[in-house]
Length: 639
Image (tube, rainbow, N blue to C red):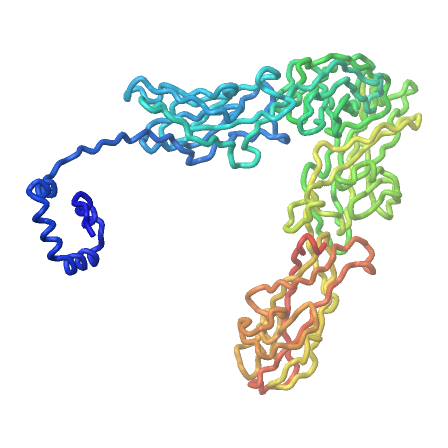
């Protein structure tokens, strides 16, 4: 066996400690012999030393997103950006060197080009550019690392912006390092639903013709028509609306209406040839009136041809009433006060007008009658039309019913003295039943009630029996919630119970009637019981002659009396309540709203009661106390 001298040092350096010891032990003589044979030259190689300088260039790293890019105002199929408006993006980028950065937004994911600043003192002066074939939507100004960058572009119809397909965007953050400028390697399209790529551009609707179906009588409906459409295909057909104004000077493109000269607007969803209907004012001379049409789509974008003009004609009129001439209850809310009955004293004032004057050529009265309907607004004058058949004490009070059913009493407050006079003024009083629907917020008023209010419709009739349209007040009022309770019996009878015993079940009862206009729960509190109790003379604190109020238990169902319960409700079954003299206990009795005025049909609910007589009671006899019930408005689902 032989060894190469050149490999031996390498072998020694790479072997483990145990291998070296074994080699030295087993081959001592051989090793020393070999070492002596190597000679001075080889020993010189082992002991010589030299040095090498290490060098490294640390390359610039690109900034990274610490807040993903997003559209400042989300642009999606349901919320597109109108042509001519700006799309803005924001993001936060952080550069590990603390250098400023740029937010770059492009139409494709083609690799962008980062540019280097001319020197360290000019960082932030060389913005990047989008890659080949990509539209550059925008690049932000130089932005401090770790702060918000924003970039915007103004959209147009056509050109680089598409209104028929989505406009993709890809965002980078880039620096302008002087020697190695870079952008992050993977672009972002955002992570935030409708504020992520792509954005959508909404084009203007097309409006080529405008007209109407006049002439019409005052108070009648006149319909304005248009030849109009929306060219956008993205996101499906868009609704378009026709807004009609009496001038071409005060249309507001922000609110899409006219500040003071509004006539009518589209009230239903239309995708072509939008129309609008107007109930004309009550007093209008037979004349020609200006009308200007404006077309706007569902995203508030106006047609480029706005406005188009087509005047309308008004012919002779029947008696009419203006909404502003109707005042309900003096402009105050309607408040009920009589449980289970009618509250009287509400007021109504209105004016009936006739464009042919209130005085006939024969000096007789032109306006001879009126039609009145007071109603909850969601029913309107179509349902509550003034006829006897529309009467319902919950939501509709028409003057077509007999006064024994609803006693509306009206009288004129002026006379018709001149052919130039067009009006008769009336002042009325009327009652409302306790079941009239509330429309205030409550508490706990169901949404279907709360969104409404109470209104009134009035129409006039002339001496030729021609009746004008029914107008509604421009100042409707709320009807206030009136939670009211009536207890059928004035006594809760527990019967006879020995000291130390209790009612086996909650079997004594109290019956509550709903005599207000809401769903009904109740709150209960009560006093201790003793033989000397009287109103204003509470029981003494005596363990032998007073039964504490908390010994009384109650519920909406006849459960077993919970004998383990302690004062304050300890150990009390959760479905049972304990009477307190200081704290009202709400009973979810859930009595529905009463809808009939006859007491035979009033809604009611039962509370079940039980009591325990303490073993310490030594005084026998009749014990009395007093429990107090308070009406509470039930939850909306219990009406």
